[in-house]
Image (tube, rainbow, N blue to C red):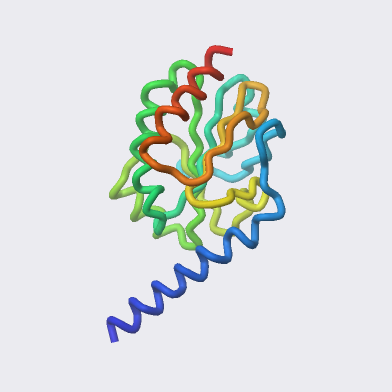
Length: 170
């Protein structure tokens, strides 16, 4: 019985993983466009609004607890947050798990100090259209998406950091 539950759970995760790109593909945001609104409360209960973040460099990262590259990326994002928050970087992690407890378990194992919002209904994802998991949008101080990263490999970190430094210097 336990094997059946596990198989059923794995199949459900696979179906969700395949359905997410199809459901949000219509709205894919690209470099040079205004960053869409986030409009959800973070895990501390505070609203995350793009208008409040103007004048800051913002990295919006879409992730999920079931995503292996997301687990690899989170410590990198936390390092960016710690290193650049005092210079004006704001990181907003947008969790796409349907169930908030999955997000909470992930964050217990991989704690971060940047802002996290739960987007179980894909409201934010529907506005951004992340092409794969994870996907990151680096937004300049005027609220314009300047860089989009689809997926994550450890070798991507250096390039992302250069882009953040460039926008912080502008």
